[in-house]
Image (spheres, rainbow, N blue to C red):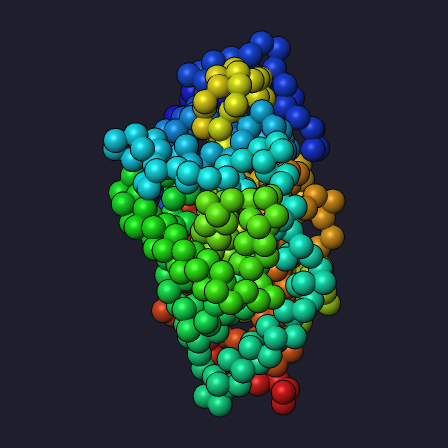
Length: 422
């Protein structure tokens, strides 16, 4: 980033206050903003420090794909404002050499890709499967699964937490929800991991992303055919019932299942890994008073979703900058979560934190993640089990935790002592 041009650009912006929106005397063009590219080696070497330096210089920057915002207030505004819609499909389209998404944009309605009446209709059909009652009905089974996995590793006092525990839970839980054989869980996990790389906007991964999405669609087709023959108490059967009632068509079901399958596994898996890694690296926080607050603090401190993409639906002024319709706007959640205007002492990991502002990983407003309660339950049951059963583990030297473009835990070897007989 050009720090001199950043300083000059920042002078165009008006003052800031806690939680306040930025303003400017005159709207300035995007070209006058400092340039920031989160794909550089410099950024990867110190993403936290780099984001803090950029945020302090300017709350809004020019990026390779459009503009980016770095403060909590600005990220919250973009996510909430209907002038900006989720932009992952547009990001995929632009990242593909022929200008077509890889694969082409889904030919039916999706939660991320729809707005207004269509979006509300889809949420009404899906949300009954993510209510507190439904999530609580899965809690006991999830806790039993976690206990089974911990039982298997405790005799040695060592485990590779991702392979032995975290990678096993979200795929299994989601198989329960959609009504398929849990043996297909690893297949789902693999496809989900690749499909979510779409959010990177990296042209080099789009062919693999397209192949993974096609695999998920084939999976959805198989599931639809099976549930047409033998419906059950599962989300797939409920979606098909909505088709029979004329609320959805079968293309909607296919697209919704593909979307849910891709989004509900990989992010939760890595969130579990990051939570256990953070608690292990902060042993004074290993015995949390509140599991719920701990899950939220882990998501704030090191979010799995480090940034998100939106697209301007019309010409709009954002933080005093003239943003034309069609501009891709990146919201840097990892920066927003360390914004001192939103969080007191934001660089301190504190499981007892009671912030005035919620973390933004699950979004806000009309596109708030339908699976948020499910993910929180799964992560919470893992945190509850390990902090109850183990003393604070030691993290092995071969751990691989990546916190630049996304939050990912590729390996988490742990050595632990059992603190209680389960």
